[in-house]
Amino acid sequence: MIHIIRLRPLKQYSDLRFAKWIKPFEDAGLVIDLERDAKQELELVFDIINDKTGDNYYYNHILKNSTHKESPSSLFKHLHARDEMIPTLCYYYSDGNKKRNIRGVHNCHQLQTLTKTAKERNYLN
Image (cartoon, rainbow, N blue to C red; front, side, top):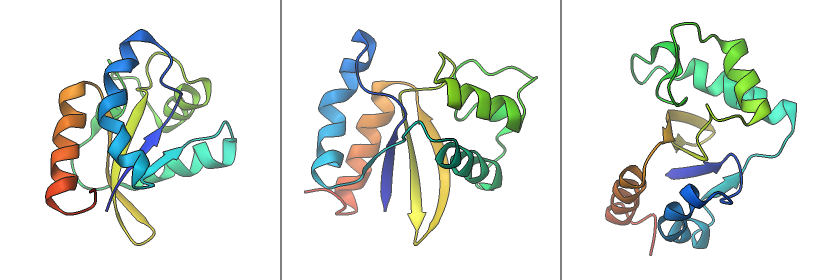
């Protein structure tokens, strides 16, 4: 199953391009809004750190413009502050309670491809 995590509301003009493509996921109940709760944010950071689906050095699969100085604590700080390094949306595949292949959505094309994949696998109507 594919789930989307909304890290912040779609308020900025640049985020409006995602609105059309996230709607089918919202209708299917597959969008999770990450609250400003340190416990939930820390759980997400642990899930990202423990995700072994690829070589994800310096968290460039999540962060925008990551540097070679990124660490788990800096990832948490970015996530908690919801600064410009954090994308508006992330997605992951779930097998029961386990999250795998956690990625940030950095452009509209990624979300279009994700929507197509979800429809092919009958996750969406």
